[in-house]
Length: 95
Length: 95
Length: 95
Length: 95
Image (cartoon, rainbow over all chains, first blue to last red; front, side, top):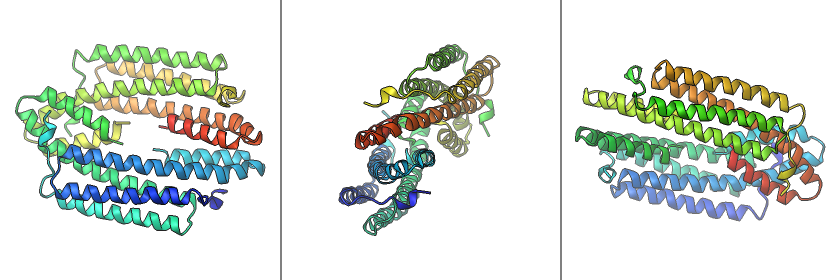
């Protein structure tokens, strides 16, 4: 399993951190909306918006995983194993 | 549009609020994982877990929407319109 | 379980049948594309198109299910049970 | 765009062809079910089964795309461009 060695690249860390802070704010906004007695459809819309923001973070992390890990694996001659792993990860995490 | 009148029922509000607080905690956990330099796959796993928790909240809200709003609409004789709206909402928000 | 009694309404049957015939044609088109050695991306695009067409059929059937079955259940006084079933069906089949 | 040069490998063609034939049979089975007046839930279950079979074909094709195309691109030194394309294709076609 080559996965073990895939970390976020230094330039990706602050991008992910910033997005997660924004998502934390969105979740708190959702709590306020519940307290204020907002309509169900407004709540569903905001939930979908947080889910989309999380998907975007997931996309950044998956892109980083491909770049740091798959690249290394393919160059090292384990291409078949790497492709199998990419497929597994992709079908597990892409929503 | 009957949607406008669908609010969370009093007994559903605390359930949704509790789950949102747990989700806020999960997002902060994710921030810590980024700071600690955890593996990409660990991050993807945690992101998927937050997405699942949000889906569960969405399910509670959608269930409430059906119960308070569709029920009223169907009894009032606007069944066709209500079913169209349910279908629209369902295909928009179910992930 | 109220589900057992939900059938396609007479006016929905030909709509569903026509769409399924078109989908059969699309699948055969896909077989020809494979025989002709088309690009992977062309194949993926066509597969996505068949999946979308199937989703549309599913939507017609789910709409019919709501109309014939849920309506009856809600009027009969089993609203809670009907909503639970709708939620179960929706989260099982909506893609 | 490196995509243009990704074809199904000779050993993958018969696998994809066999699956597509099975799917054509499933679609015809679905038509019979409609003719026989089967329950909505039975129809939804069969539709979901065809969608799953199509997803499996899509997975085979995507795996082939990765292997023939990405591998070549990464070795040729266009790794960044290849990863961008993989991400685009993956988020477009994985369902």
